[in-house]
Image (tube, rainbow, N blue to C red; front, side, top):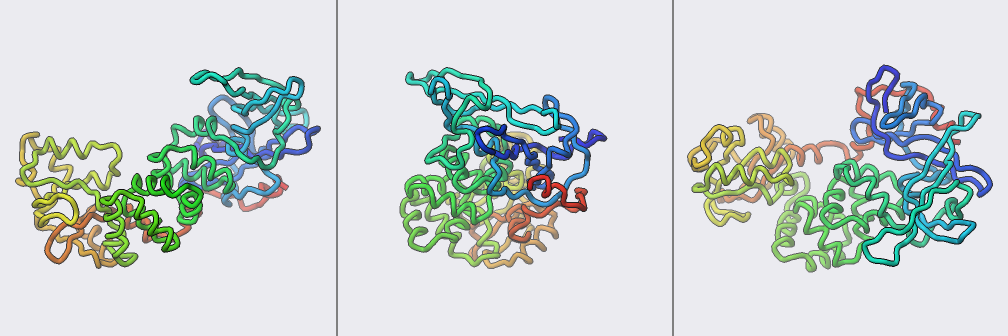
Length: 412
């Protein structure tokens, strides 16, 4: 979405539709737009001046109040895609995989055509598709269904980053959120859960069977898994820990033993750990792991065996900039920063913040009283604990907002 000057306002994530009676064409009320900071807002169609392939132009006046779906509204992507409908004339059943909208003479936007796909009886083959006028199908106006798939919706959201997909899920009704979560694979769902507020995490995990919930927790980073398990009832938490792989559960239990808002409580137990005789080539190979966050990839932690936390004595850290300047065959033990102090598990948030700021770091080691590495604290862990719980729901000060509330009136 762009303003009249050509500056990007945000990305369109969904359309808000009023499904009226079967005799009235569904009206498009507005757009759900993700603005900077992963905040979803509502933009009335009356603010849209131009619709073209790949872009929508708005008047430039945007109300920054967070979008909240009303009971009379339906999300086009979130709730209509994969909805089961039936062709009135033939009785053929299928699921919605696309829709078309058009502008009427009164300047209203309405849904005009529906594309549906029949189920296939042959494995690996797609069913026949139909593109029909909106009034040729039954079931489009259904408020709730016993079960709704998520195949086409997930295909539309496939390229989203976990944080962006989490923002979409957060704005969906609980029933639809659970259906989509159930359709995601374990690794993808774990990544998305890490980006969701705790109440959404607990809700989604509670709808999964215990075996799958334990698998999801194993896929999450240990610190995020520990935070989530701590929000569950004790008996459920213990059940899930018993179902997890022993090594994964041990890491989570260890993290849960530390006080909240301490280095031990926020650290990850999976930094890059190497012995001193490892080479720069080996270190860089591990740093290239695409699943590592930039902050975790910034440091390599060099210890005596064992190399699993709690490790042998921490010898020092090797900075990624130093590794990139040395020949691949050089030993990491010869380029350690051994003068930097380490954090203790009991270090407070203030201690961690001061430490990272003092040494200009994005990560730091956490050790026990014997100098053994327990884990690492990253700047993103710190920010998650320093920011207010509802920080994702707050607009950025740099984004302009409309003073009026005509957007809400347009949805009435």
